[in-house]
Amino acid sequence: MLLAEPSFNKDENREKMLEIMFEKYKVPAVFISKNAVLSSFSCGRSTAVVVDSGGGSTCVAPVHEGYVLQKAVVRSALSGEKLTDYLLSVMESKGVKVRPRYSLSKKVGKDGSVLKVSDAAGIDNTRDSYKKYMQKVIVNDIKETLCRASETHFDEANAQIPAQYELPDGKVIDVGPERFKACELLFNPSLLEPERASIFGVNSPSDITAIQDCITQSVGLCDADIKKDLLQAVILTGGNTLFPQFKERLERDLGEAVTLMKVKIISPMATTERRFSVWIGGSILASLGSFQQMWISKKQWSEEGSKIVHTQCP
Image 1 (cartoon, rainbow, N blue to C red):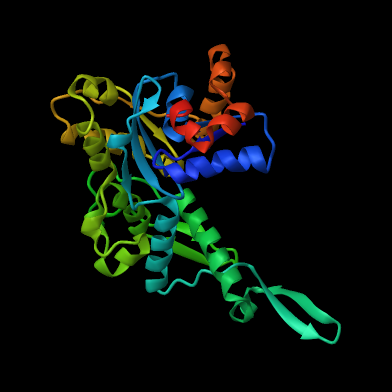
Image 2: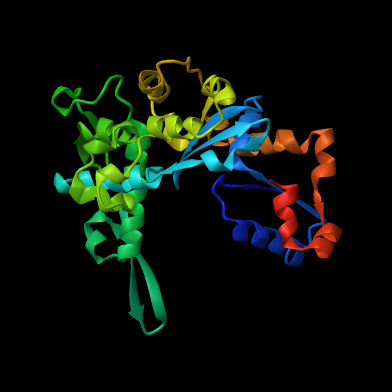
C-alpha cells in the first residue's frame, strides 16, 4: 500500500497511518510518500518547488533529490473551498439568491418520515444543511466556470464586462468583478475585505500570505546552492491552478519578486495531469524496480514499531 500525505503532515499522524494499515487492513507492506515528491515525479523532476493549491489548502514545498526540505515548507490560508465561501458571501451581499432547482424536505406521517421533493419555491422549507451544501455546489461551479486570473494587477474600476450564469432555478445572473477578485486574492490578499477575513480563518487580510510570497519564502529558506535549480522548476498542481491565466500571472508576479534569478514554471496542459499529479507520480514511483526495497514490511513494523516510518519514509 503506497500512501500519499501532505508535506506538512504531523509525525503522530504518520505513525497512526502505519498502525491502521497493518492492524486494521492487514497489508503486507506500506510506504508513505509526500504529495510534493509525487507531484515532482509526475513531471519527471527530482528537484523542484511544488506549488499545491487545492480545495483544502495551499502549500509550497521544495523538493531536492526526491526529498522534501521540511524546514522550508510554507502554507497559506487560501484554499479552493474558502474561495467558494468568499464568492458566495459576495454574491449574497449583492442580493443574489443562490438556490437549487429542487428542494428536499421531510414530512412525518403515521407511517414515518416521508421525503418530499419539490421545486425551488419550497427551498425555505428544506433543511439548512442541504441548502448550504447545494449553495456551495452551485457557487463552486460558478467559480470553476467563470472565474479567472487577471492578466495584470486587478482594478475593480476597470473590470471587464460581467459574465452571465444560469442558476438551476432558471434565473440568469450577472457575475461581475468578483469573478476576477476571487482568484486575485491568491496573488493579492490585501484586497480581501476585513469583515470577510474570518472566512479564511484569520483575523485580518495581512495574516494571509500571497502565493508568490509563499514561493519566495520557501526558496529563501533553502541552501543558496540549490535556489537556482528550484526556481528553474516551479511545478503547479491542484484545482486552484486551473484558473485561466493563472500560470501567466504567477510567472509575472514571481518574476517581479525574484529579479536576480530566472524563473521557469512547469504547468501540465492537461487538466487531469494537474489535478491528479500526486496519483500519477505515485504510479510512476511504485513501478520502479529500485523502489521495491523501500517498503516497510509488517515484520519490520512489528520489530521496530511505528517510529520506523521516520527513517524509512523521510
